[in-house]
Every structure is written in C-alpha cells, then in structure tokens.
Length: 531
Image (cartoon, rainbow, N blue to C red; front, top):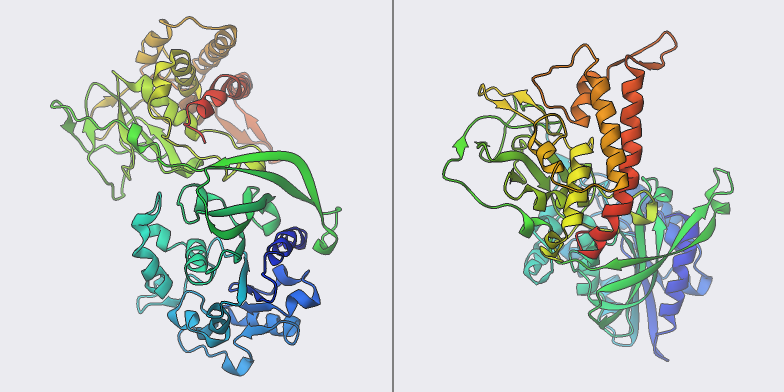
C-alpha cells in the first residue's frame, strides 16, 4: 500500500476510533498485513491496540522486525511458532481463511469480549500471489483455496448475495471481506476500513453496512495499471444504500523514486458509484429457429475461423444470422465482449438475427465505453437494470448501429468457412450489405454524414490495394488487418504501404471516438446500460 494512501486511510481509522464507547478497549486488526505498510503511520498508542498477521513467512519476518514490541500482538507471536507443515513458505496458523485462525486464542479473546471494539483495517490481496500452493505429481500447479474453511462456509450463503456464483467464493478478496464481516464485526461500534475494487459491494452485494466515508485511489500506485480502488469506512450497522459518492485522490511522486515523499492530491472529482443488479444477459437473443442448420464453423476472437481447438456450444447456420455477440458479466474490457461473424469458440453469447439486430447492437456499444481516466475504470459496469427501455429510442439505436458498423472492434469478417459456405459480413457499409441498405433508410445528421464520407474514402483507398478482393464485403477491421499492410524500414520504423489508406483509417477512429462520446455515452447512462 503506498504510504500516501495509507496515511489518508488512517483518517478513516481515527474516525472509527472515536466510536469506541467510553471504558471500552479496542483493537485494530489486519489479517493480511504483508510487511505492515498500512500501519506505518499509526501513532504509538494506536499501535499498542494493533494485531497483525500475514500468511507469507518472509513478510512475517519483516513484520517482526518492524513492529515486534510496538503492537499488541503479531500472529504467531514468535518465529518459533511459525510452523510451515502444510505449505512451504506459508505459516499454518496465520492463514486467515482457515478454521484454525478463527479459533486463534490471541485474537478470539478480543472478539469474545463485549467490552472491546473491533476495527478491521485491511488491504486484502486482489490476486492471490500465494494461490499456487503446491504442484501435483504431474507437475501441474494447483491451489487448495476452494477447500479453505472460509470458502466452504461462504458457499453456503452465496444465494443470499445479489449477484454471485461459485467463483465469488474463490476470489481471495471476497473471502477476506466476507469473513471479516461474518466473524469479527459484532457490535454497532465495530468498523471495517477496507481497500478494495468496488465490485464487492457494487455487484456482488457482500456488504450492506453503514457507509460512513470513503475515497477512490489510483491503482497505478499499487504496481498495477491505472484504475480505481475504493477505500471505505463501513460501520457495523445494517443499512441499504444504492448510491455512493467518492472523492478521487491521486498521488504526486515529486518526480522521485522514493515513495516516502509522495503527496496525496485531491483531483477535485466526485465519482458516483451505483449498485447494479442485472448483467446484460436478460437482453440477449434467446430464440431458436426451425430452419437453423448445425454446422462446424466457430470463430476466434479476431473473427477468423477457429481451427485446432476445442469449441463449445452449437454452431448454427441460417440466412437470418448476421453475427455472434458476447457481452459477458458486468465488467468493461476486451475480454468481456466480442462481435464475430459466426459463434465464438467459447460460446458465451448469442446470435444476431436480421429482424432485431438493431436492438442488440447497443449492448456491444456499452461494452466499448472507453474508461479513459483511471477513476472511471472498475467503477462503471454494463447492466440490464434499465430493461429494454432503450429500444424505444430510435435515434439511439441508429447511433449504435452506425458506430458498430464503423468500429474496428467489430470483428465480423467476410470469409469462406470450412463447411464451404460463404459468410458475408453484413454489418459493414460496403456495397449491397444489409447494413448499407439500413443506412439508406436513415436521415443522417452532419456528424454522421462526415463519418460516412470518411468511410467512403477508406473504402476507395482500400480498393486500390493489391490484396483487395471485390467478392468480399469489408469492414474497417478487415481492411486494417488484411489491406493496410506495412513493413519495417532500415531504421526499424514502421512504414505503411498505403499511407493515404492508413491516414483515413486513423481519421475514422478519431471521429468515431468523438461521435461515441457525443451521441452514445450519455444515453448509455440514461438507459442504465452503463451504471
């Protein structure tokens, strides 16, 4: 945890301490303390109330060196107690997800004491660096996290959560949060000050406690890519809340590598985080047709035919099928969406049919929300909470249609499949496609006319290339992949064979980005396709 953020979070801990009833003892407990960065700014008095543990032995050695004699307890209390019979390098009794840990007398004496207030102060691991806990006799790396006591107990309560499945009981962050609330917070004056991405309360529904305060910080400073992590003070009082406002704080590193002189920066942005209920799944196409013909053509995520790999689902041919869309889960990102001409190899989506495809393309557009700023990432999710209200807005459907047909993320290709059928890309504005015919029915505004003019220039330049095939219907993506060829010169610089074509493609990307922000983004939020 960066010191600047740890210091900012300490403000929340000190507010939580103010809730301690007069005459009560209190503890500040961190079950995943690592090397103790969160505790570095605690006062001597606050340290005297602190209990720390970490599962990894070498981190434990650092904890002992930094805090032994300063904190109330470290679990285990001495190196002699650091038994590693189960997993090499990991301390058996410090595994916070084990039943043994829950019965640890050092901690339990305070949990069982009604005159002691409990404050959890934690930054649980987001991805478990200790997940590979052993190697089997075949050399395969394994984890036994699903067999942990806390995981087994959490599974019993999954049905009570808003959006959860068995994977929720495997994510180590969720296990820490769930067990913290379940086993350690007992009284209304208890608190949890927690670093974590927002999905645990936004979509999964792990917490329905009293939101006292919080802020967003930039995950980039945690040795990760820029995105949001929430820091929240939850008071142990039941409260249903759907909207949360977070001020966003970045870090100024003073252009030095020393993190100790980093300063917290209030970027003067308040971010609203809303709970979500439904993924886009209820809006998927679920119909089957009597004239659907089973075939053997699946697509890779780049739109080409999948070969030499295991494929799921049923590959279908029908003249009314235009493509296959995936729009998985709540999260936004390349791994959560695709649009290909035939069924994707892992079959996690639905077929687009020619009689209602216009109503489905906004789902694709929603998954392409750019999240350009760090405080937008991992904060906004795609949802079906607004139902099909958006389908009544014909201008919105038009915008998503135009955007999709011009987007390089539309991976529908024209190709001849291994079943000897020609799969024409109908979702592009090449000659005589279904999309071209639909475009003629619309009255275009000035921005749309400009986009189409640029596209026509792209298509005109594409036809001048050596590899152009007049039998195919080309999308921006297929032109970029197959016709916009390039090579490296003697200085290892990329040189395009058709610079005018490349320039027009770049211009299209820029104008399409502006179009999306102006005509699509506001309505995605209005209709709760983004939330």
